[in-house]
Image (cartoon, rainbow, N blue to C red; front, side):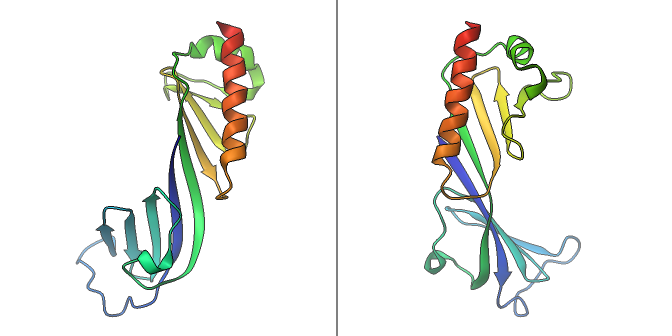
Length: 150
């Protein structure tokens, strides 16, 4: 299980920063641990954190840091016939292979759960750092569905 955590906040000292000419007015800093985008308004997004952020580790003075979303990826270690799975789930799924190569599992709305034929599952939109229970429920639910198809 791999998680990417995204935050939003406000950078305290935007007035002294040099923003590049042209649009959009933003600075992108890609340190090894995360990517931070600072806009001219002072708002910022911190993306791709593998662990929860600690203020003292941040390069900039950021106030009002809030969790924005968490993306979790899983590997079920088996191939999945998405056509059979879509037929089994009926109204609880959305599968249009001409538009997107994954089956969207709708049971866990407002989360976006995408299941790929390779056995990979991407869960987007988690808004709590205590996400293990949600991920375990989704994983066991999908595993039981796949087991009944084989």
